[in-house]
Image (cartoon, rainbow, N blue to C red; front, side):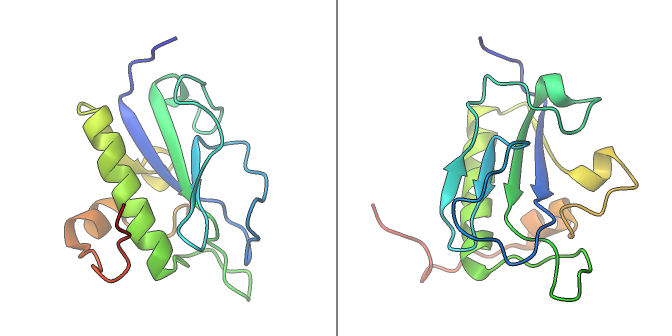
Length: 134
């Protein structure tokens, strides 16, 4: 079933130092600390995460978002930043009318993803040494 995607929602998993292959049920994609992108659900699946937009949203999260003291915030590794940026670009090409938003923009009480998504995208400069050929 094809869905009309109006939102690409960026999250953190709000977890401590996550391990690879951890189960993440509430996202379509998760970017591991290594930069590996896990597809958790196909884009055609409606994920229950942000109720008011779930029917029209793709949810992508980076694994982490909680520092050693337990505080929520931005804990992306350089590999995660590169992979997250590239995946957001790919999704925005696939869904050109979709708005790219942080979870916190849709639910003001949320701290996820721990950074301002629009500012990050606008100012992000890819590290060509991290980009993988192929």
